[in-house]
Length: 137
Image (cartoon, rainbow, N blue to C red; front, side):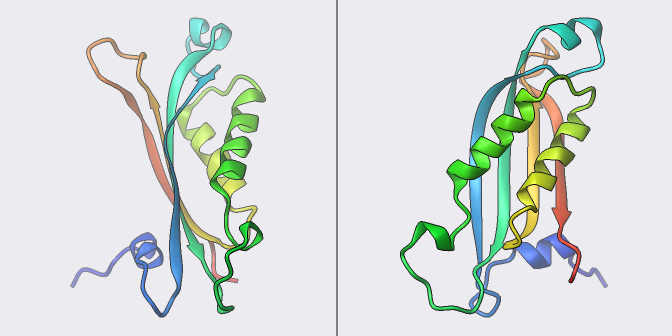
């Protein structure tokens, strides 16, 4: 018997749970990221994708930006994290971004994908994708 992972359960939108997905696709930034000497000095191109599962709550929906997780705010958070400076591992950067997403209590789950398109010449891109689910309160 295969039980669905917690992320799959949390990310399946349905009328009872009132979940929404907020996403950012192919956010291209310059990051000082990597373990090699040249990566510690010069910024390199990274492509970041986010998929946030958001609990809409039980209140009736209102057409007001304050009632939603704003993707522009999420992008500003990601940009600020990248601007902080050198990070050794793509995995670490992904964890930092996921952590920032969970600062909004409405975010139930976060999927963060970071690609380094110029790291391996023979590959279109390399990178890491993580999935994190908020612990039950």
